[in-house]
Length: 304
Image (cartoon, rainbow, N blue to C red; front, top):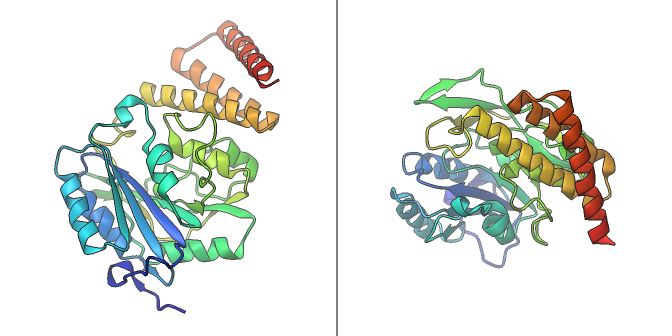
């Protein structure tokens, strides 16, 4: 068996099977990207790991840093560079570029402005997934970094185990802590590839492969809140709209899987967020229910 040492001290044979793919996206994260990459390379593993990182046409030197690291660790880091920003065109880089490139049996996610503090993170999560085939995803706690001030009490995702049904509803998980089975080797699921909040759709798809396990003993990963964050920089109303559209996409996806309970659960959450956003009346809520019912009927007709 290979010795467990930090990734930065390893060099892999290209013929060796990849056990885990670290998947990351970045855009103008020049101030943070080294900390992120160093957190990846400090992972102590006795299996092959690859790092796939997508740069969405950064203009602040982020791409130069990625090239530097890729040259230093050619058997580990595989960057993907864009000439034009894809996210602004409605393209989800994870589904369109990163996940299709992932060769690992497992995937771990962390965006370029966040970072990991626990060198045993990946080894712990992979070991748990190997021993528990009924678990589709593992995740842990986070801390927030705001202007380099650490908030250890920060709470965002749920810190408990999740059933398969709860995963299908897209209940919140601390995304940068997630390590899950690679179910995307055949391409992105229908209806999910263009959803504005891609992490929720990943959990929804994983719900068909098992349950979620919270690992409280993992050291908290670091989630940065800053003006350049894709989601955290959005106003609350915009976040609600993004979540609503994502839930509708998830409802349609579950419908194609013939899981009507999961589809209805996502529709109920979407309607609740619409009401929250607009202060809507029961009349509007009922109208939305009827509209969505007609939409689902039209989907069924197209499938016949």
